[in-house]
Image: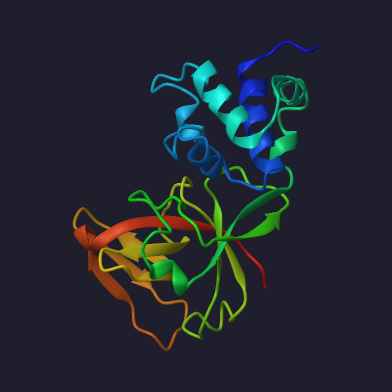
Amino acid sequence: MKRLTHDRIWSSIDALAHRYGLSVSGLAKRSGLDPTAFNKSKRATGDGRPRWPTTESIAKVLDATGATLDDFATLASSDPGAARRNVPIPLIGLTKAGAGGFFDDGGYPVGDGWEQVQFPRVDDENAYALEVTGESMESLYREGDILIVSPNAPTQNDDRVVIRTTDGKVMARLLVRRTTNTIELASLNPDHPNFVFPLDRVEWIARIIWASQ
């Protein structure tokens, strides 16, 4: 058996989530853990040292999925990159995304009501998909297009982003600029005006990393 390294242990958790059609957040939640427990950001300390999952968390994952310790060991001895090559990620309609219960305060997908969509490779375990509804994003995006959104990806000017405001509105826009107090967003439809929001009205913002067109 290959040596159990930090990458292989985390890869095994990723692979178990994939096997049971879950995101790592969904796997953590099903296991009775904090939904962010297995996030990529939790896999290292602030100064870059590897952080290992506890034996208790692994035991809870095995209990929640019905997998055995042998299953876990086998997955941990496989290629660490294999688990992320073709993964199911949560899918929801853009209009429905404005309802409560689908995102936590940081903009990560949680809760029930998500469908699943297969995606060949994504390096953010919290990535999710939004299905475009309506015509507010034409001519760039049409109704039925799928947007892959990464809440962990950094954003900068000219990025296409999804934003949720404190009143529950979710929209896809072009990030024009962000100051210490405001954020300016351009509509993807030239017939709609730009929006300028006070930053305290923005609940979260995430970058669109791919779109089906």
